[in-house]
Image 1 (tube, rainbow, N blue to C red):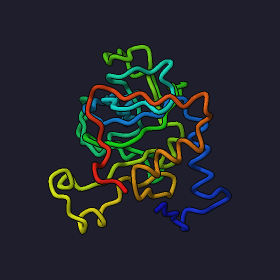
Image 2 (cartoon, one colour):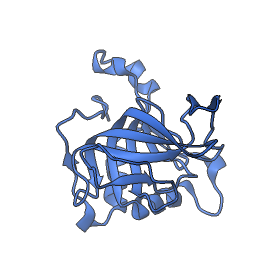
Image 3 (cartoon, rainbow, N blue to C red):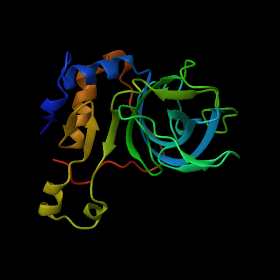
Image 4 (cartoon, rainbow, N blue to C red):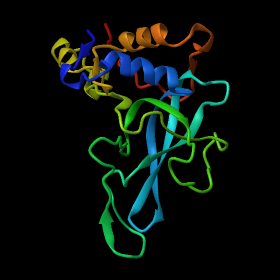
Length: 208
């Protein structure tokens, strides 16, 4: 069951926000943050290089390939850092999206267009692509949220306690099939070209 958080309604509903993010994102892919490094543009202005292992590509496979990709985010992702002027922590802001090490789910991105400073050399397999979240100030990330025990225990109680994904523009998805249907409904047919990568996918095994 798809749940809409009514508290997030403004001029656009969560569903409209979600459709807008899906349309504007050049790259939509499933993956996991496997490494983070940090850089300053000036003292106190910190950004995170998120290195993501791609497990599935929903949109943008013409230019994005399986492997790893760099996605830039604002702030220090909750980490305390010292660039030579003392230890400090930089929050992205209450409305800015941050990722953390081991974050896994579906990312909505475009190429970094100068909104974030140049992060330097790119050592990922997609070395010609440096990405950023399509709407940095919104929750444009479908965060997978399921209990790993479900891989071992086919327990209906555990299953019912865990959404497979959450936190996308105020929407919560009750199952992986709902995510696929959302993409089918909102990505133009000529751009629908799902690519499954060699790395194992994180999709829940006991989806309705």
